[in-house]
Length: 391
Image 1 (cartoon, rainbow, N blue to C red):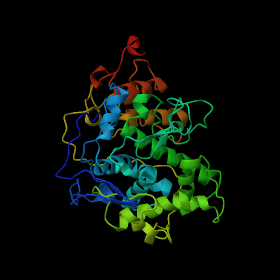
Image 2 (image 1 turned 180 degrees about the horizontal axis):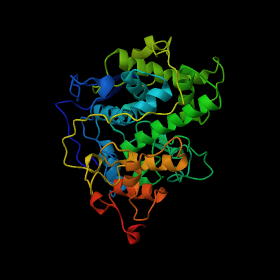
Image 3 (image 1 turned 180 degrees about the vertical axis):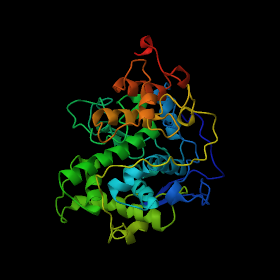
Image 4 (image 1 turned 90 degrees about the vertical axis):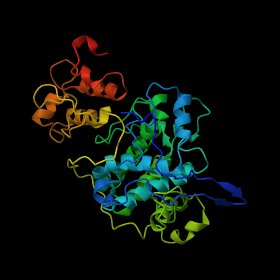
């Protein structure tokens, strides 16, 4: 479940940045961390750094969580993003309308570059902004590679606009343990962008790349309405992001320790027509079909995310979505089912598997148990719980 000790692959060196006037210089490795023979388009990169649903122990102090994030190389920061993209690839493919996985990788590298230079300043994923008023007080208080704001989280300040329109992705509650974890931050940043995709499509009736463009604008401003081509804000944020994304994609820097940054002259050639390389995409709010799980190259000891303990017959307690694993995605499947049983109906065996709280019937409390399982409060061996075990 948790990646307590990340495995460093090969001799990839952390990027070193020197400031000389307005120029940056980097020391980069050309060695990709994943198996180069993988079919990335269909399989993803395979999680070569063995990231779990968290990057850090759930019970670690905030200082320890941030220390672990701080030590990530640029390459690790990239693959941490890819891990979340691969886990939600079908959702991203449909919502963004982009069929090419590596272009979506590049898109999020562009966001990370615009927001945090992908950790290339030596901070890894440990970047925090707008925190002076205290934890969770400011709606602009953000953390991580994508600079995910507290507004993305459930149970944040109720005066903030809720972001509860992405039922396909689990929404973590706001706490220092979730907010400061690099993997959870990536998960919630991706979810936040999809929050604005839904609004751009359903409320503002945008189409094509303008949906993606507007969702990036919304990620930064909170508003994703189209304000005209003369709005200089587009050039400053979404158009800059996609130009930086094009640089990573076209220059072959998806997998190494190389990075770019806002106003980097090396990306000038991509700024004149920033969206020209992006596909003729067709973003959609269509229902997401179940897809087989991505094959990974994880070699760490047995973890919650890869355990398939069977308790009597074909029942795998916790495996609500019937993918052979017990992960946070099963909690999401339960919550989706409760919210819209017609659209997100659990299969009969999935409903049996989902009933883990010791009380007959599938409820939100079953999802809560699986969330606590993911946090390390429960173990698979304890499922299903007894009546007195649920708190």
